[in-house]
Structures are given as C-alpha cells and as structure tokens.
Image 1 (spheres, rainbow, N blue to C red):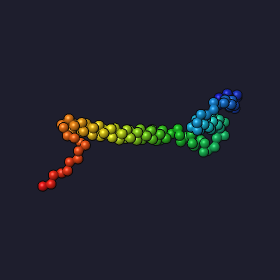
Image 2 (cartoon, rainbow, N blue to C red):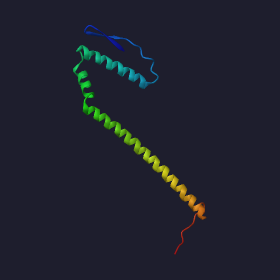
Image 3 (cartoon, helix red, strand yellow):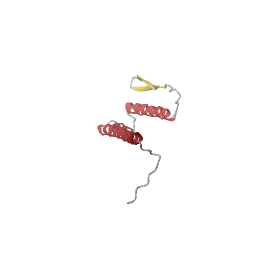
Length: 118
C-alpha cells in the first residue's frame, strides 16, 4: 500500500499484491499490511497502547541484540552440524586409507584370523 498526505490526514491507496505462491509469502503480505495499518494509526494518534509498546519494544537496542544472538546461535548450530558431517567423512576416509595400506602390505582383510591361544 502506498499513501499520500492530504492536509493532516493520511489516505492509503490500495495497491494489490501479486498472488502469493506459498504460505510464507502470504504471511509476509499480511504482516506488511498489518504494519502499514499500525503505522497509519500511529501517525493519526489512534494507535492502542499495545501497538505503541510493540513497536517501541522491537525497536529497542535489547531486542536488536537478542535477534543478533539468535542469528549467531543458528549459525553455531549449522557449524556444529557441518563439523559432525566432516568428522564422519574423515573417519570414513581414514578407514579406507588403513584398508588400502593393509592390502599394500599383503594382508587380506577378507580372511578372519582367530587369535592364538597361549
């Protein structure tokens, strides 16, 4: 939605969104509309205390830091998952190298040897 200012009133011009292709896009569209509606109310001085408090809270330094912390935690979890995958790959490669070295020395891994009894 776009808006124009006529004297002291803000008049919204209805602009159509393209059809949403999935649920997330639709939620984004509705969120955008809700933000614009509350923005209009804030400008007109008719916003509820809850609406005003919400925007004060999301604009605070603490909220921004909390969002950064959440983003960093997500990155950390992704890095940990990647480290686990890399470790599994290293273990597999190490096993293959050891088997190749045993074959090179003439050991046959297909034959199972019984331990010698004393």
